[in-house]
Image 1 (cartoon, rainbow, N blue to C red):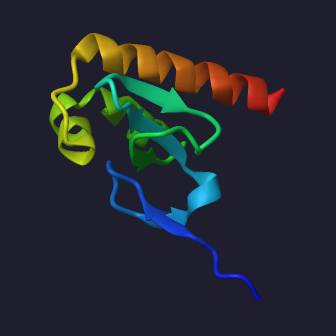
Image 2 (cartoon, rainbow, N blue to C red):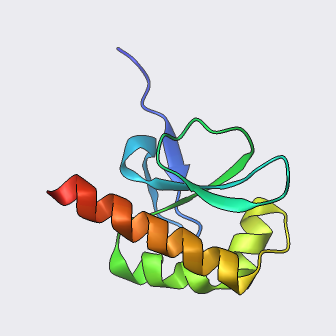
Amino acid sequence: MRKIPMRTCVMCRKKTDKRELLRIVRTPQGDVVFDPTGKQNGRGAYVCSDDSCLNSVKNVKKVSAALDVTAKAEQLEEVLKKIREYLDEKRV
């Protein structure tokens, strides 16, 4: 039996199966982006698809601490937009 990889949501601190979470990445160039594949190079942080956690993605301090980078509010707005688009496509 294979071990299921577990990750913690950086917003609510709930441990969940890695495949159920959404990954935000600090790329080697220092950009903060959404990683729908879960395989992009860089330091990753995971977020639940729960609305309260998604809305908290705008919290620059938590995301910056998790990714060890100074994230900008504009970057996080773009990440949130990409996550919502991804979730909308997945639901259809």
